[in-house]
Length: 357
Image (cartoon, rainbow, N blue to C red; front, side):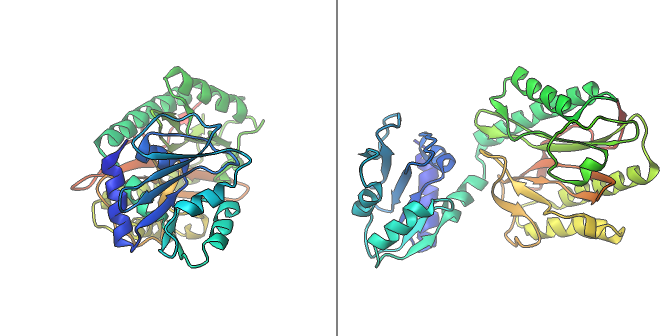
């Protein structure tokens, strides 16, 4: 049980005017209680109450450890939503987690017509966003592993290989280094394929002069890493290396601003303005970064729309890019940890362009 984390969530609920909430994200429930269930289509929820009368709602198919939280069991033939409705305080605002399926929420709202339901994910996600000391060390260790995987990949890649071959090699390295698996399917993009930021590896073969985008991450101890580096195969066009330098400088400009209190939108602005001033603003087509921790994309981002301030303990990506359709793409990505006085860049792999293969 993570009683301190639950206490922080309860304080956030109080500030939001809530005394009860349903948490449904399995990762958030694990984060708060140490109980992990993959529910698939079944209901799985943690009910948090300001008076401490928390409850698990659990299908009898689940195997969970005993905790101090009351367990409310049901079967596949029971009306699980009705069971939840019996335990919720009707007429009092009820916080709802971000991804609770409509097949549970809507029937609950019908059963409790006088109970206002409010989106309250921020009460949990805001706590998860600021990593404690143990989580920070896990993020450091995973980034150290990711640096090593990137080093191995850069040494492995050769002209004539396919993207799929490189992706398979990457997956082998995470297993060899003790990871539970990748954080996400690795992105391996050669040449014009790199103009698609989320291109999935195919049978494209690497040719001399191609850019090589490797966006990779592993998961160990329940926490994720993520990093992108862009290389060139054997030779590099001067125009493309200049764009790589531009993206790297945008990455470094944003990282230089990271410290508690700085609005996250200002980090996005710093990188985007540098790229726009060089005439490539239209080709930087995504936000600057995303939060990361127990999943590769946690709630929260680094974008022009997010005016929230950076806080000590946050971990997020800084990943500007330029994508020229049908021609070329480059992205340079690090994870950063916000410290009391600035930030710690968790990735140490060299981010200057170089030729490999």
